[in-house]
Length: 452
Ligand code: PLP
Picture 1 (tube, rainbow, N blue to C red):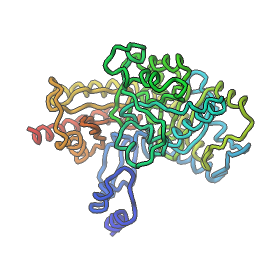
Picture 2 (picture 1 turned 60 degrees about the horizontal axis):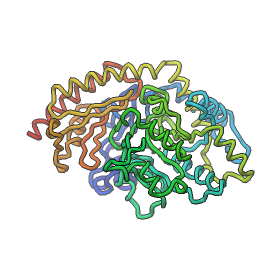
Picture 3 (picture 1 turned 180 degrees about the horizontal axis):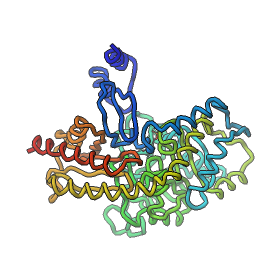
Picture 4 (picture 1 turned 45 degrees about the horizontal axis):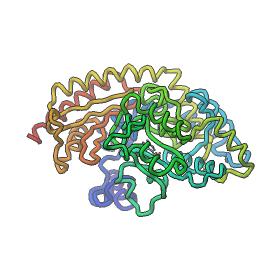
């Protein structure tokens, strides 16, 4: 039968990303998903789940959108692919670059296209280093990122990733990547008599020498690291610091971009304009791969003035017309259906229901949600900040309990933390959210019995 066949082939022939190779080989896939509609997906047995992670924080418009499918079909039948190398171009990529320039804050008006978030971060690092080289500042090679950050898995992107499980996965690191301690706002503003100063971005710049630093990269809100929201003033402090030293500021908007946080871009929650934004995921609602590096006109103009050499960087699929057509449709839907203001409304619903979870369930604490990017922690004793023992896998137990009841959520158990992430498609309505929260409550009840 089909199920057994798929399980066998999956075990034998499919090495899965970010999963236990052994567990997979022994047990096969946990779910085989077959179809989706709105915020829900169905597995091969016909079980339905609310997708509380929008697949990988990317299926922002939900499943089963025929308009996105139509946009892809039309483009595939007209001109499925065309190169944008050299001076070739295509209608969809041009229109998308123009559209992004209208949506992005400040003078972030120029796009370089990729196929995903890692490629976008890899590209921004290389383009910036190329720039410094052209400026005669070849020693400006170092990239500062934050602890707990996630920037992807290519050599540079994983070297910038703060989660050391990813960074130390392979032996070879790209040199010159340094992680700072997140959210030391006062240090970034210049307060030096702080115990942690040497671990701040400013401390690192002072130690390494400003003429060695190419850029600082950070997520407006850290996603994979556990939905960590910076304190007010932090992003501005980093912006000011980068200005002070003439260092580029990169915002990794791969999760936050295109409405996830209730603004078009995450940085807009703090009215900060970075020098570069990297995007992917939500730009096509995950229906097809696409990413971009968005930069200021002034940067592109300076690059042009520095050299007439070829930019020896680009992917076969940079500016893929079919991907760009789906992105254009995604952005059209975001605007026409007022999705972003809906997200802001739903933020209030989630926060209210998180409050109820906290009141009903002793272990729930540190709830946070910006737009539809939310999470809470489970602690053994929130009043004394006591964590569960790592072997209790607290967040995993809660997430499994949710899964069993028809809600997919992500546990984050990095360095002893136990966060449970809730980031449903941006089209989730109040009743979807209430249903998800009722499931959370049931899963937490079961969890409480287990840990008693
Ligand atoms: N940056 C952030 C903030 C991400 O969350 C991710 C993926 O989750 C990436 C970069 C990498 O993107 P991709 O997996 O498309 O290469």
